[in-house]
Image 1 (cartoon, rainbow, N blue to C red):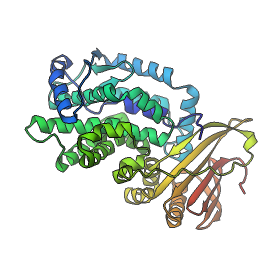
Image 2 (cartoon, helix red, strand yellow; image 1 turned 120 degrees about the horizontal axis):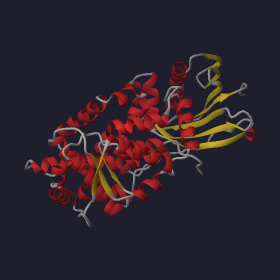
Image 3 (cartoon, rainbow, N blue to C red; image 1 turned 30 degrees about the vertical axis):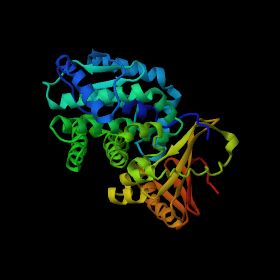
Length: 412
């Protein structure tokens, strides 16, 4: 499927730049880089082929740098399409400013990042008093540099943009492996095995989620934005651990050479190891298709459906139902005359029963994400009516649920 605009360009940018641990006293920390590189090499079996250059940056410089990089890499039309898609899906509120929120999140949380284009490590030179957190955060960034020297991260990320969901999975590989290596490095430094015990994994998961929640911009962001930011670190780390338990040292290269293709594979590593790929459904036919032009299309994954269902149901129901997803696709369309937008998307499930259950739950999503909903048809196989975004039709075809939302006239 050809893509004109992927949904997660800004979210991908956010994940690439954010470091969830604070840095401090970088000059003294930089002197420890050689010993950190040696430790990472002994754990992974991969050696640093060249020194990693570094530079300091102020918070103001960081904001200006991020603003310029977003301007250079993401077109305004792509930002608009991404934002509109998230709004029509119900993943962010209608007054949400995606670009500004992304920049605010970046400058609030990012204290260090490895730039794979410049092959350089950047660290803020303001804040903190030094300590263990700063050192393990530096190990995290050096792990990115090590992966880049062997697996060309720029190419890895670029190829991932062919699929929204696959791109997020690749982010989880990058951040998850670096997070796992932080913990393994600490274990080795303490005299233990270069591995991560289950208790440490649980502690790191809690630490990442707790530390992220301490930031005001992050805490006030919509659930989907928060989940998208922590997903690569937490779920990616757990994914790396599972693959390491099966493949040992080979896992560090395997996840780059043969990347996971969906967030579902990250959440359920057994699917990755079994090479079970998503089943991407065709989109439903677009009524009056000649009246529209495509602004963007792409794939949705278990991460999106978890966030959507959890936001309007609860975590237990949402996560349980989303796990039955087999694959999903979407297209954002714009009316050529009045520039209004509509959304078409489809999801295939692992059984007709799972699809029917999702349709039942999606009724509650419609009621939750809309200020006003009037149903003209409300059965166990189809939902039709009118909401504040326009007319909608959601219907079951075997194990696939089709959606048309935002139309100006009744759908048939």
